[in-house]
Image (tube, rainbow, N blue to C red; front, side, top):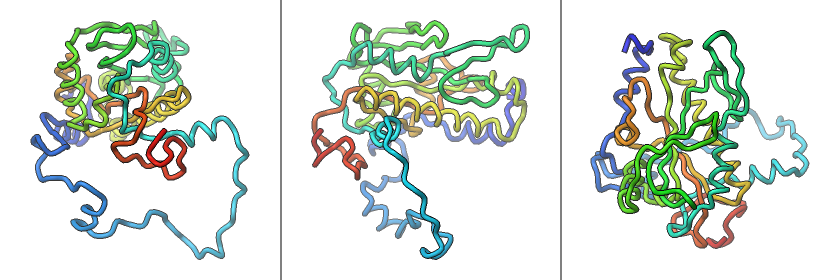
Length: 289
């Protein structure tokens, strides 16, 4: 632990928060049964805190002019967590490659000093180190065998790590996302992992280092949402994951390399079977696309 330059409280938090064999759908070892609806939550915990923070009287507020319409604004409006993937669809390889390039590829390199190379990507990274990696579980992608892969960000290429039968890939997908079947149905799942040892090479025993890695995962997931939305695809990110299962599958030790979140993307189903929050009906109209 000391050789990896972890800040001790962060190392403890990381170690105790890693799940194994947890099924949030209720059939595994996740502990007490989780509430199944917002009404269940209210019955158990009472009303939630207010949705909006108000720090003054309405008459004191200074109204701001709304923005003009733009392609970016329209794209942001279509950003929606997908819980309804078409479980029979095959993701075109061109769409898969486009999303991977726009989100995870290195778009430039610069040698800061001999042996110290900085990468330029489309999302920010603390210290410019880019310690996040994308490990891929393919279920249904055109031209790719189901299995496990690592994405090479400089060569924009996949490195095969092992093939899987269709049912084995589906079971592993569900295990990765802790039983969230609505996420496991995505044709491709990405485990966003952190190379802690690269990040902590610079930020040694640093109280903020671990927090920055989670911020970075958030930046990348938002970029993935937008890249998928532009292609008309659904996407999601979840931190409710079985980290230890992901580590075993991809051969990660959990101390120098470990998963922070899982993302997925692919074609949506034609009808909404699992609720998605879309009050503006940017994607769904009466539960139908």
